[in-house]
Structure formats: structure tokens, C-alpha cells
Image (cartoon, rainbow, N blue to C red; front, side, top):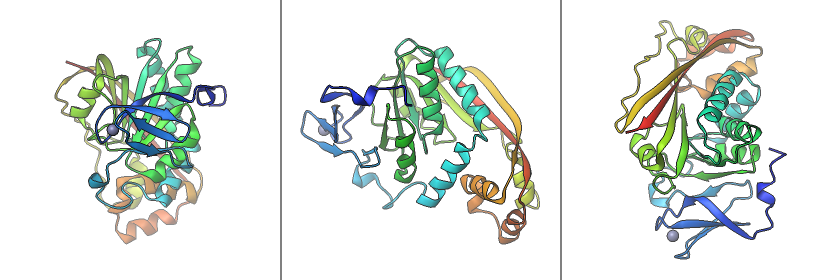
Length: 287
Ligand SMILES: [Zn+2]
């Protein structure tokens, strides 16, 4: 966000929300990366994110979305097709934020929602500190460009690089639901926001690629350590107005990996598709 001057601080080092993935002590942020008191160093990539995933936890050389998929996701979300969800999240986060909220986005992807929420919190006169993690460095390349006031790191939702009781607000949007880690990282009066697909989300896309599409299951997630606080539905229809946009959205979905050739061919013949969007934002408090 242009109005945010946080990264131009004259201070040579500053506190970070991240902890050291090796020894779990606090990390100090420098111009070029992070360092802990034990001397573990983590360089910031030129693209602006930092790698905090220990090598022995990487199950492949480039886990998560590859470059092409990250670019498709970035193009699609930048087109504003999911703006109704971003707007609802921004309003909810602002409603539940204290004056100086710590906001963590677990599985932030290419940072669209992270940046939209952080920007909304600042515009509301609040002073957020924000961090996003994702397993995909291809996605984080885009995320770090979206908002220089947010810290971004390669890390796993199942081993979040944050100290216990750090976050006031924690988002998991179409991302792994690591409730144990979410419970550890949230403050006792914090709020967890989990975004899941509604029953008819992308129904017309599924009709195009499958002979017999099924509705999504709307069963609330089993969330040990939390109690439900609210459930907000976001519904609408968006017009996918070119073959490229349809393919970009398709590449973001789990159907991309399991659609037979005939379904792919039917979809690739389309250059317009009105499609239902349906999101369910589950809000939880720790118990
Ligand atoms: Zn360390």
C-alpha cells in the first residue's frame, strides 16, 4: 500500500512477528533478512519474502503452487472477481480488530486477501502488524509485491513460525485447517476466520467439466479448541468474460487435477461463463 511507510523506517533493525524455525526464539528484522539471538540467519529473497521452512520439512524442491498456477491465481484475483469475499473479510476483520491488531494469514497464497485486509485495517485508523505464510514461494513472489508493510515467509500451516498467543486475528482462506497451530498462535480473546466453499460455489464450472457434478459439503469443520462465534455467507454471480479468465479460475480449483480430457475440452471451448460464487466465513473463538 503506497500510503504505508512502514518499510522505510530509519531504524536499522526492528521486531518481527516471526520466530526462528530452528530454535524458536524471536527474530529481528534487518534490511536483508532476519536473525535470532542464537545467530541463525535467514536472508530475504530479492522478491521480498523469506524462507523459514526447515529443509527437512520440505517434501519436494518446490512445494505448493508452481509458477504457472501462481500466476494464474494472481491474474484472476487481481481481476476483482472475488472482491465480494475480500470486502466482507475486510469489514469483519475491522469489526473485530483491537487498535493495534496482529493479523496472521495462514496459507496466504499470492496475498490478495492479506493485502486487502491489511489495507482496510489501516484505512480504519488502526495500526496493524501483519504476516502471511504459504508453502509456495511462487505465490509469495506476488504476495510480497502486494503490500510492503506485511511480512511474508515460506512456512507450513502445521508449523507456524509464530510464538504462542501472538495473533488477534487469524485467517485461513481455502487453506489447510491446522486447528492445533491456530489455537497455539491465537491470543485467548483472538478470532479465527476460516473461509470454505458454499454448496453451489463454482457450480456452472463444475457443470461444464463433469457429467455429474456434486454440491460441496457445507458441514462445519471439526475444530477442537474453538467455539463457533458467527457464520457469514457471501453469495453472488460473476461473469467470466474470456477463455483466459475461465482457464485461470479452473487452474485455481481442485478440479484442475482430476478432470478427464472430455471435461477439459468442453471447458476450453467456452469464452463466457456466468458462475456462482458462494463462500462461508466461519468465525471461531478459542475456548
Ligand atoms: Zn534461532
